[in-house]
Each structure stands twice: as C-alpha cells, then as structure tokens.
Amino acid sequence: MQNLGIDVLFKGTNMLRLLGGLWVSLRISLIAVGFSIALGIPLGMLMTKDSKIVKAIARLYLEIVRVMPQMVLLFIVFFGTTRIFGWNLNAELASVIVFSFWGCAEMSDLVRGAFISIPKHQYESARALGMNSFTVFFFVILPQTLRRLLPTSINLVTRMIKTTSLVMMIGVVEVLKVGQQIIEANRNSSPNAAFGVYGTVLLLYFIGCWPISMLSKYLEKKWSNS
Amino acid sequence: MSKKEEIVRVDHITKRYEENAILEDFSLSVYEGEVVVIVGPSGCGKSTILRIMNGLEPVQKGEVTYRGEKVDGKLGSITRIREKVGMVFQSYELFPHKTILQNVMLAPVLVQKRDKKEVKEEALQLLSRVGLSEKKDNYPRQLSGGQKQRVAIVRALCMHPEVLLFDEVTAALDPEMVREVLEVILSLAKEGKTMVIVTHEMAFAEAIADRVIFLDAGHIEEEGTAEEFFRHPKSERAKQFLNSFTYDKVVHE
Ligand SMILES: Nc1ncnc2c1ncn2[C@@H]1O[C@H](COP(=O)(O)OP(=O)(O)OP(=O)(O)O)[C@@H](O)[C@H]1O
Ligand SMILES: [Mg+2]
Image 1 (spheres, chains in turn purple, yellow):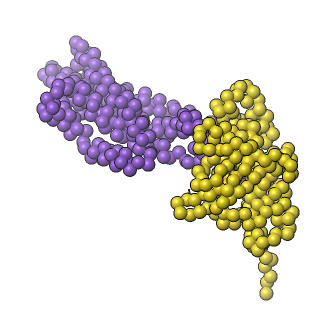
Image 2 (cartoon, rainbow over the protein chains, first blue to last red; image 1 turned 45 degrees about the horizontal axis):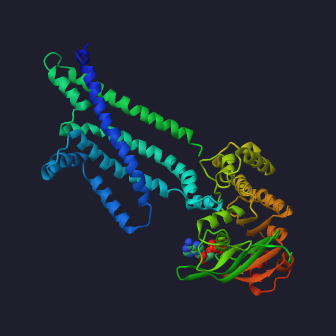
C-alpha cells in the first residue's frame, strides 16, 4: 500500500504545531464571532427602526462587505492602512478586524431579518396583557427572535471559521500554513506528506466546526415545538 | 342596569389614520356587569374602538377613562389599565415559544408579581374549566384553532380583568369550532362579567347582549337591547345590515 504521508505528523512536535495552528484559526474566528454577535445584534435592532439615514448607512455597509472578497479586505487592512496611517498592526489583529467587520455586517442583517419576521400581533397581545416594553422585549420577542436566528447564525460562524484559511495570505501562521511548512520541511523524506497533512487539516476543520453544527441541531430540535 | 357603576368610558374620541377620520366625536360607556355587543359592516371601526379602549391605539382627540381615571400615554397608567382590561383578538396570539400553562402564567407572575404557586393553581383551574387541562404542557402549534382561542381567553381571565374585550374571536375558526369558544364566553356572561364583544355571529350576539350597538362608518347608527335591535330594528341601515345575514329561498321557475 502507498504511504499516506501521515507519518510526518508524528515526527518531532509536528502534530503539536498543527494543533497550535488550529488554535490560531479558532482564536481569530471566535474573537471575531464574539464581536460580530456583540455588535451585530444592536446594529440589527437599529436597522429595524424606521430611520431612513440608519437604513441607508446600514445598506451601504452591508453592500460593501458583500461585494468585497474577504481577501481584498485583508490586504487593504493589513498592507494598505499600515502604510497610509503608519500604524503598527500585527497580522492576527488585522485578521480579527476584517473578520469582525464582515461578521458584524452579516450578523446584523440576520438579526434584522429575524426581528421583522416576528408578527406585530405578538407585541400587541403582550402589551394587552399589561407588559411594558422591557418585558415584552425580553420575555416575548427576544426568545422568539433567537430561535429564528439560530440556524442562520451558526451557518455564519462555521463559514467564518472556514474562511480563516485566508489569513495565511497576510502571514498569520494558522493551521493551513503550519501544514504547508511541515510538508515543505519533509519534501525529500516523505514526498506523500501533502495528502496526509492536508487530510489531517481537513479533519481538524471538521472537528472545529462539527460540534457547533451539532449544538445547533440539538437546540433546533429542542426548540422545534415552538 | 342604569344605576350600575361606569367602568370604561370612551369620551368624545376622534381617531384618524392620516387624513381619514375613522371615528369622529365618538362616545361609549360600559357599565359594570354589562355585556355590550358591537356589530356593523366591515371597516366601520369596531376593532379600532376596542383597541382604543385598551390603549393600543393613539387618538387625536378625546380621552378614555377607566373608573373615572384617565388613561393617558404615561407608561404607568396605561399598563395598569391594561391589567384591568383583558383583550382577546381574532387570530390566535399565544406566545409560540411557551407552553399553554406558561402562556397563561406569564403576565400574572411578571406584571402583577403574584405568587407563582397561586397563579399556577388558578391557571390549571381555569384551563380545566375550558376543558384543556391535559394540554397544559403542549405548545400552541399543537392545538386546534378553537383550543388556542380558549387558551387566549383563559390567559386574559387569569389577570382578573374587570372588563373583557373580544374582537371577532371566532372569525378565523372553522365552523365546527366556533361553538366551543362561544360557549366559554356565554358562561362568562352568566357569571356577570363585564364584556364588550365584536362579532359577526348574530345568533350569539342576540343571545348574549344586554345592549347592542350598531356601528356604521364610525358612528353609532342605532343602539338598543338585543330584543329591540334584532327583532325591531329602526334604521334602514340596521335593517339592511341584518338582512345581509339571511338568504332568500331559491324558487325554481
Ligand atoms: N393601521 C391603519 N392604517 C390606516 N387605516 C387603518 C388602519 N387600521 C385600520 N384602518 C382603517 O380604519 C377603518 C376601521 O378599521 P377597523 O379595523 O376598526 O374596522 P372593523 O370594523 O374592525 O372591520 P372588520 O369587521 O373588517 O374587522 C377601516 O376603514 C380601515 O381601513
Ligand atoms: Mg375588526
């Protein structure tokens, strides 16, 4: 049988380095997800208001994020702004900024969609029971919104994790980059390493994203009767 | 009935949507223990009146008083009045993420800060009264339309309202479910609950009403006891309206 090239991973600290790379990927995406949720929810709520100005600005923001490839955003922030403004931005921070910028836009749109999908009479029947705006929001509207938000936002999170593979383009040593380095270093001794190492990277992404998908499936099932 | 205390008064209300006046200088008083039925053609303003009574609809002129107290936009007063005025709408507006029991218990516990155990006991008792004890742990989507409306009535009752407003609560139901809901309302009337009911079920209206108000284009065209209105309508509009519920027998030539 052909050598699958997995053996290189057991040389020295290779496996540990790969896991370290995975941690870098997850760290970037999870911090960005955190910002996206923290900023995207209030922004999305703001977008449900009637103000034309807010709507126009939000629209513009969303369109910019949508049409720009994440890679171009990364280049602009990392190479472009550091030159022009002369500040010092390490690659990981630049990645977090770009991913938050992207995630926040998408998140706010999902939040907006979820909020406006709650029928108006849910507000009215709650108010008719004497609830004030605070209780209406926290006990009636928000729980229903979160349930509707769950599948789409989990999808966003996993997309963000997967897309972190781009950050190696600005020099962040994340899981894919570590994999590349290991393959390069062992080019002569194990020429099949590409298969084993990239295969393992794939598996690691799977291990990173799968529990999140499972969690969402579980919650969806638990909430499905509502 | 004339000596009974006035509970809700709608006083010289003017309500407009943009330029359209829906109600012009409209007044209506509801007295303790009375069942007022409002009927009238579609779009004449029946729902609007109920929503104004419950402070859900801002008005351009006039005021609503509750036992003499003015209901104004100020938060405290309006939520206090809504506790006392229960309302059930046409489409089932239960909270879909809560079980039947939770739907009923939410406001008494949250708004009235009542003891959870005591509220639960009462909620179960009310649910069993409308024949829905076994459904207490189900979610609204597992119930039929008629069952949901009965829960909505229980949910309003559990707040101990002094007046109940019903806005076409059977209009969205399949015909065979109408009765089970109307029976509940009839039993409340027998208990002497004060109610304002908007309905298109004329037989029900005649059976339950102490006073019928016939509304046309935002004003009271005719008013009287059930007997007077349904048996001896005075105005042409009322006669026309009542006729629209009967059909002439087809005669084959
Ligand atoms: N939000 C709104 N904006 C503009 N016009 C409205 C609004 N709500 C109601 N109207 C108008 O006010 C009038 C009275 O409406 P209302 O719902 O009170 O009628 P209704 O008597 O309850 O009718 P129905 O029997 O069909 O329920 C209607 O002509 C309606 O078109
Ligand atoms: Mg109506």
